[in-house]
Image (cartoon, rainbow, N blue to C red; front, side, top):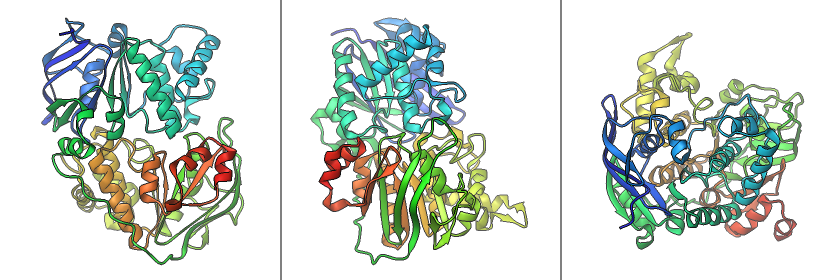
Length: 503
């Protein structure tokens, strides 16, 4: 047999009493695309950090091209030819994109910028090399991470959810490029929760559950249902159907909103008009960086309008209001950035619950009731199957998917009239994603108004009654989801006139 490019034997890693990985065996063949499957908290990210030198194993051994190897740091991994794109990004926000690239790549800015543009065109991952990272959306930051990895010419490329920010047309292009990289001698470790992607592109798959390997297989020889059951150890629940609901009052209305951000790298919004009624889910599609960040800040209250008569919630003009005032009206918000905006990494889950649930009797007369906060957090952990030792665990210690479940659960538990969710299942495994979507549809059936921004078209088609597409700061007309095909949405996403005519 051909010597594996990378092999792991008996790898184990624990954090206190939490056993993240236990006796992991893994072999990645040369010129292969190898999937790592598992639900949130299964140990996938920890294993990748061990391979990339971010963490050191407690036990076990690693070999590179058949030779024993110990990677003491990411720099050592990169010298061997291992590159990784993390689920949580590692970019300096005050630097430009090309300046971040310069931290790991020698060369002049102009030359690096040109190479970035070329890779961006090849991968469908365009981003302005001279934009400051703090001005980029989450999706654009992921593009930077992928390009930065590719510029090191890796022999093994580790990708964590690489397609979550791409439109369907770009996913196809990315897969073609990954296959070209494989055929050119690069091996790829791919973490993805989209089983159809795993089956389309991967040669092998390793399945983790609770930190242990439960199987090595060819994903093309199994159907999605079988793979999903192997990942989570149980059958995937059936989707909750969207029941016919009599449309309620307008809980969110935006009328002819124009907005020019102070940030020179921001996206101006023009003529934004939308309505969300009780008993309705409105989905907003679009490629990241087309104004989602600016629209999100205006709806959430993080950015206030200097003028009135543009944004209404529960019938009240909220343009000049801040976030707290909007929440008092019955508004709740799940941001796409889990760490930093959705939760404070260094704080416990109980304290993070207080950030938005302080009106739920966890703060009385200005004094925090810690028992009440812990009880609220514990209810959220139990109700939303958050895998964590308890309410005193730090938010930053949770896997991305488990933290997302906690934040979504925290906001739903506030029983809002209007719920705004940005990227509800980004980085969340198939079982948890199904549970979150079920809950959103059930809330819609019960009469709640829900606005969802997502870059996953499959998700929007599963959830939404209507879809609007954001492109270059402009919204398409609302499209009835059941009468619309994904290809039509895709044409709107790239600004095609054919898409407009198709509507």
